[in-house]
Length: 242
Image (cartoon, rainbow, N blue to C red; front, side):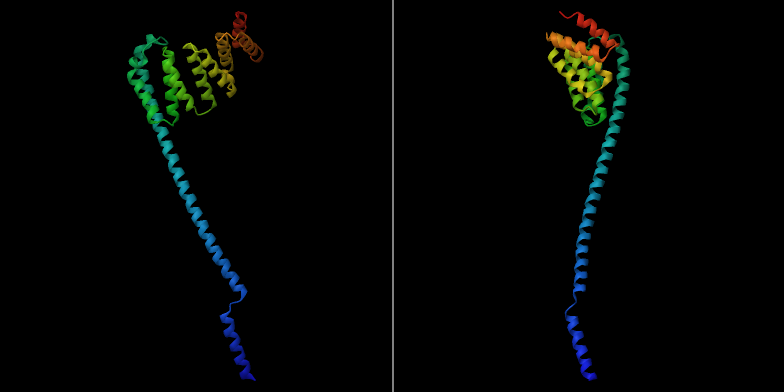
């Protein structure tokens, strides 16, 4: 009896070795699945780390370029101040800016080309526009104001450029373009510019012989900006409408 029992046990053990139970198979499958998933996770993490390093490198590169642009603009300003001192008698008078301020104009233009996507480039473009405007070269001013507008970093700067562009168009005898520039600036919501912009709109509506709209804009100034210098001007100009 004992011998048969032992043989029976031995036979059962051998069968069990050849056929692992379901629990072991399940654990093995789970471990394999986790291993595959962990490989995917590690791969994903490596990709994200690589992207993060690339972004950090790019941002550092942009920061370094922005700083170089700032330094270049500072040096150009110093050159301009030194060069302009010899032209003080021509302040706000018509002159050939490129010929009179050759060195500083070249330096400022170099910032536009070498640091095109930095704030220094925006400031250089605005500076050039204002220089040409202040000395009666309105077509050149318009070209640089347009470049500055395309690179304006926020709504305030954009409002400033549109206002400047409006004045440049107005002074070059292009009231339709001036009106459009002033009107584009108004919805940007810069209250400090609102009075000037509305007066610019009204002046150019008047220049285009649209007296009904001009009167309406002057009334808007009187309503929205009462007891201001803008309201006083609006009242005078409105009374002069023919």
